[in-house]
Length: 338
Ligand code: 13P
Image (cartoon, rainbow, N blue to C red):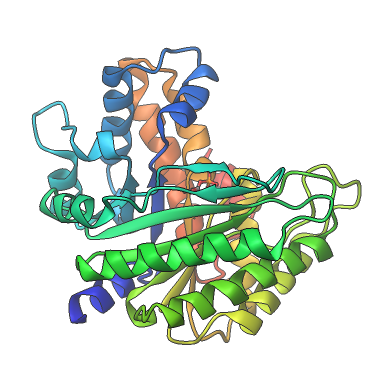
């Protein structure tokens, strides 16, 4: 367990957070569509090659979550991506869930699949260099949902996954994402997030998961994306801290946030607000996908001549979030760097 604790702590080291680059085939296809390039194996490899070779990225990025295909791919000089990251002091991680699927009999709700054969897959992933993993569950807010049943089915699967991950000496990142989709209020998000985290930590305990070698990845408490009344950054920060204090044991070394559709700058400002408030038992960090990658993919456009521009964009967002780790970010830093 000593290694698990050290890895979990390293992932939330001061000034650093995690880059989520584990888009599944359908998700990366969607991202590539926005720059009008096809999702084929070489484009996916070239894009990740650009991200992982960003000069200085290790100053602000502690680990990268990879997709199964990416963990098996290599940089243009032939170095395996996991080796490349490791050589720069960045810890390779792996997304192991098989996606959120419709939960039978519960219209509008999902349950994440992927437990079958997971013990064997973990063995292989360890051999390929993965030292942490991620499993994402999706909780939807709507008319009479989320149900307790859906929350529980997902919490149970997350805990089974986490126990298997630790057995393989791989740090689990348990990720229940309460979606922003809808016109619900921040109170609805708070309540769904609270119910979800409460059940999750009860399940982790029941499954004898060592919390000191585990990280929580979750959503911030926000107004629904289509709500006419949008909560301020300060309110998001306060309500998020409130729900974490009420549900997350102090044994967890860190909580890392997903961006979940928040803009890149909102994601940074809100993390910064929370770290300004401070006085918390865990590190508060980031594990952003879109909020780190959006400007980079836009600058890259699938062309090798834009690699440097793409890397600069990623470095900038990583740095801004690295500063938000200690509440030192200010919005004027966005234009200074431009
Ligand atoms: P976003 O930050 O784009 O939500 O992605 C994070 C992630 O890993 C979702 O599972």
